[in-house]
Length: 437
Image (cartoon, rainbow, N blue to C red; front, side, top):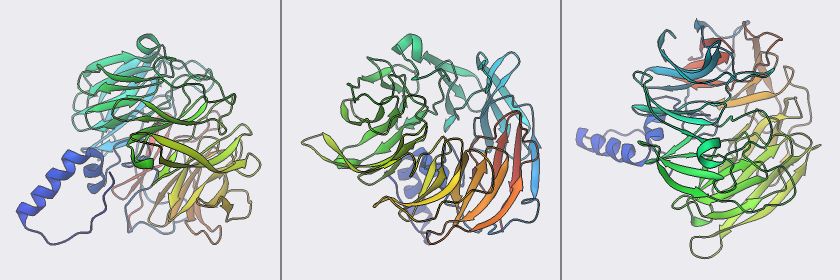
């Protein structure tokens, strides 16, 4: 449950009660109140920061740089920030690692080897660790789910999605998911026939339930996609929504029962972007020529949900490769095109494009984050662009080049905004800028 509350003068006892209730409800919400970024795409997994009083324009050359950390290895993982520490993943010469860094200066506190290197032309992990107090959860590219202590990096438990659950990817680029922690459970996507999505006890790694997904249709391919799970209460039932190899699926949070599926949005190469959830609506888009869709959820009897297509946009109108999108006041913003980031604004309810098609400030796919009325587009060629979140017109405000971006590796990691700082992971480096006014 998402809660929005305004600051009020309260007694110390009332404040303590409020904080205790929030802790019991959701660790992510406590992290949000502290200005942290504890998981993939932020506290709500939607790419939108609640921070304010940020720079509305950048100086020439970009905002002031605070520091650069190095030694993080190859990969496209973003960062998580919680409890005064930064967490990310990367491939070193001897294997794949999760790192814990000091939030103040980026100094390495610990590095834990979790698996073998990702051996292909675009090597390195894609997933981002999920922080839950004293523990974190990460998935390496071989599909191992690991639980580590945030203070020391010590491994608590490990499961293998291929070996333990018959897991498989829809294509050859290995596992890329960022785990979801919900209450006492960790939810991940093996993509197996008998275990498409699984819930594990977050303290022990033991099975809570395994969800099976029936045939959704002919589009796409069997197996897990490259997306990460979201929570929905659409149709009055709490459930988990994921974009898999055959399209969007919803499984009940209590027991993993399959609720609904939507096949039309799937392509046969790689389904990547994390869904957007708003009340009874689910939006997602895939590339490789496929398109985008809005699905309406409604009650379908006790504990059941029905999914109805509200609209489908073909690939010429909208296809998002892997940079994702953000939702602000009913408008979706992101990048359109296969290996392109043409900026778009889309009225989510109607599917109407609000900006004329225009080339962006950079080249290649664009990863998008939002904060304080601004959109942060990070292009594949290392261009950062600041754009107004204005549905009436496309308004490019400022740009700069990430200094250690190279033509040899695409600049794909999603931007992170926490405590008045902009974090840009660039392969072996982490660049941190001050964006507070």
